[in-house]
Amino acid sequence: MLQLINVSKLFHPGSADEKIALVNINLTLEPGDFVTVIGSNGAGKSTLMNMISGVIKPDVGRIIIGGNDVSNLPEYKRSRWIGRVFQDPMAGTAPHMTIEENLAMAYTRGQNRGLRIGVTSKRRTLFREQLSRLGIGLEDRLRAKVGTLSGGERQALSLLMASFTEPQILLLDEHTAALDPARAELVTQLTQSIVSELKLTTLMVTHNMEQAIRLGNRLIMMDNGRVILDVNEDKKCHLTMEQLLGEFEAISGHKLSDDRVMLG
Ligand SMILES: Nc1ncnc2c1ncn2[C@@H]1O[C@H](COP(=O)(O)OP(=O)(O)OP(=O)(O)O)[C@@H](O)[C@H]1O
Image (cartoon, rainbow, N blue to C red; front, side, top):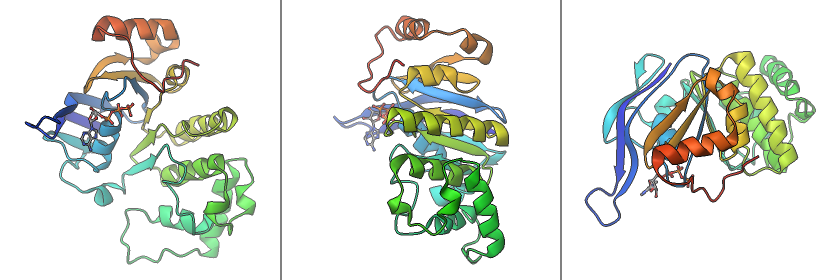
């Protein structure tokens, strides 16, 4: 479903600012895999997400999504296969447009722009149905401007917009990190139910260790541009935070340094 083959990225090569971002990444996600990603500061987590979505091109290596080699495709051409939710609730939605207009835009993502991005009554019914699954009353606010929603409501809407067209891959980029604990938990629960219901292949970066262990069927840890630990479902079920931090230290040779890490 998603394959990264020998992907590497160096920023500002040969200069004093040279930064290793990704080193020879080989990663395969099977259909329906829900993989959580944790790592130290500057480990390459954001670069990995940007690489998959096409914001950044690899120096070497290939990226395959649903059997298509997308390595040379720009972000807008990959968007038909990818749904992405960012940390910033302001990032995934258009604040001056209404909820239904935002959903209509997401609905036609990656399709021929010649198609009208309209809100027909059939689509409105569909949107209302989809929104009601979030369970936070947005189905009664179809014509409200998205800028009037709270951060949690906006992230829930972003999640729906990123997922309801059932993309080949869903990228969640610390998407609960900017929310207060109650709203973060709500969006986490929505994530779990949407991903499992639609069987979406998902990659989720998080700084919350407890969340990384609890969610999904696989966990990877990154350090200094490399995937240093890949934990499968059986092992993850019994994993504790202490064990995970211990393994990180044993493999990397240093403690996990993450100024935003949340241990629970
Ligand atoms: N556009 C860029 N230009 C130059 N260097 C960059 C750029 N983007 C990332 N880097 C560098 O690449 C490395 C990997 O950064 P990246 O943001 O992917 O790490 P991260 O794991 O997401 O870190 P954090 O958890 O601190 O956000 C870092 O050394 C970073 O400084």
